[in-house]
Image 1 (cartoon, one colour):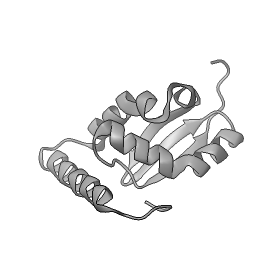
Image 2 (cartoon, one colour):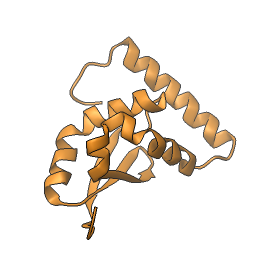
Image 3 (cartoon, rainbow, N blue to C red):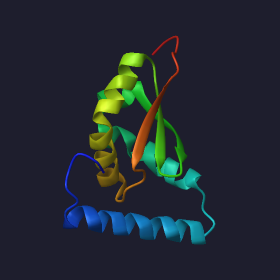
Image 4 (cartoon, one colour):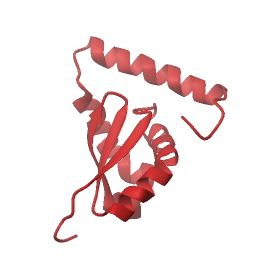
Length: 110
């Protein structure tokens, strides 16, 4: 991930993540299973307040797509993407994506 050096712990997480991804594929499990784990861990990974406004909606290869309510939230996600992905890797137990993108979808009520 950009923004920091890849130390031994980062390399171990990457190796574990790659092994888990390989196992899931070999067992016929789709990215839907990984996305389910992301959804379950999201509030713990990013904090309850942010989870209220930013919601994972898709996993496309190594990209996690989140939905936000406004352009300012999309900007905030872009600025925090490395930190959010690192927190998510810790909460899930392995890296799930190397990129994070936000799409804006306004909702009428919260």
